[in-house]
Amino acid sequence: MDDSYQKCMRRLLGKTLKCTLDDGRTATGKLICVDRLKNLILGHVVEERMVDSSFYCDEEYTAANGSKMIVTKRELTQAMIPGIHLVKVEVERSTYEEDIEPILG
Image (cartoon, rainbow, N blue to C red; front, side, top):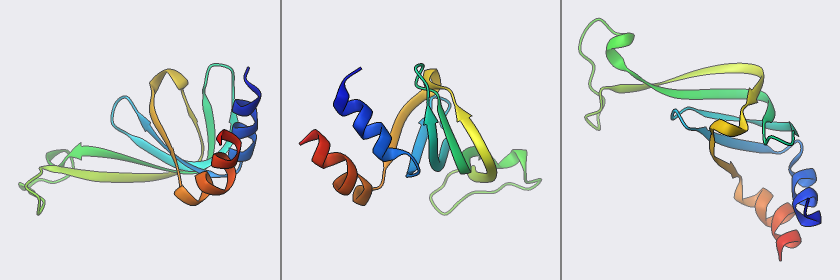
């Protein structure tokens, strides 16, 4: 494994990441660990997903933007995010600039 990759991953431990999964859900939490299959363990997680409003509301609900979808959130102590389902992993700009950019150059 590339040494700069390992340094970047070590610097991200304990930092807040936002992970987007292939089914559209996002999970935001602090990185606890990563395994060789790119599975992530996050702590203090907030999961968000879009759900059809008819699933929760008896009457027709339309958001201001015309969408019939609502965002549902749930808080989890920890979550394992399977690497195979990861689409995107985001980190705050300040974390990138302070911890990652100096390693990558």
